[in-house]
Length: 368
Image (tube, rainbow, N blue to C red; front, top):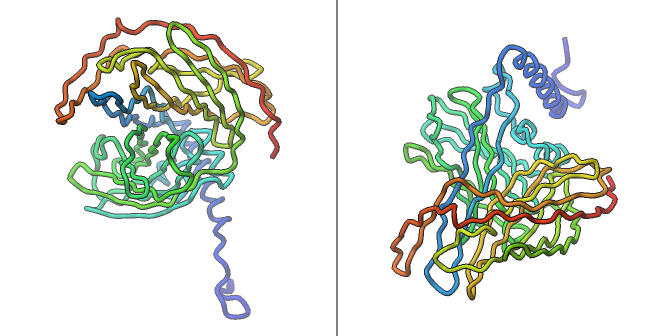
């Protein structure tokens, strides 16, 4: 018979690392077996898209969402779907950057859980890098939940205040009718502090409100590479100031300006995206990102931080190609000084195709 106590009468230390390793190995083995017998479960996608909103004044600010990443994850083993493991959402998300950041200990493990009406929501893990604040959560319910039970996902506050502008995305992966995981992403703005108290509010279909307060701090494991590239094409002035490299991915900072009018923010410059390839021609997966803009003295000024997958240590050069991701539909909302809203119809004919020139960026040698 095994001893239950050490010789000094104390309980032996719980083998946490060994247990988690065994669980992870079990998940991997069960996933392999599950993938052989059934098609992968595709994570449903939702984007938290705020309408284009601006004020009829000399200066206007608004938030736009150009695109969001396709949140597609590997299949969790059905036999283990009822076992929420804190920190496993990022590792099994299908995002290379989140997986690497989690494995390298750059994320904050939270594990805070709240239960309302038999629905338990756990904030598992948070990552604050140069381009996104990403939150992983697990939802476990006593009853079956509808697909859109949590709407567009979390609302965000910074030190108790709602950001003036912001955009992001929210996606869920259904494990079973009562269990699902979710990933919420909020785009980082220049005005955000490096550390703050993040408030999260998740609303349920039946009026439930799960509220969390989480301390977050931007990761310091980033290499900032000055770019300072400028080009002017078809009336658009593009300025790519820098990129940052970290285990969670690439963040690309840019600004763009284009002449226009206060009643027409649907300009080509607001739809700029980027393709990045390494010296071998391998394309780095883009996760897009939202953007913001303001109108001043007859010019619209747009800015954003675009996010991409991390790169290997041996990558020495990147080729960056700007392009326009023009939408096929959309629209906006105009608000006057009294708060009266007027819908703005989408006019694709007003948008013009623009061909930007690619440029290259030499990277410093990365060290482990």
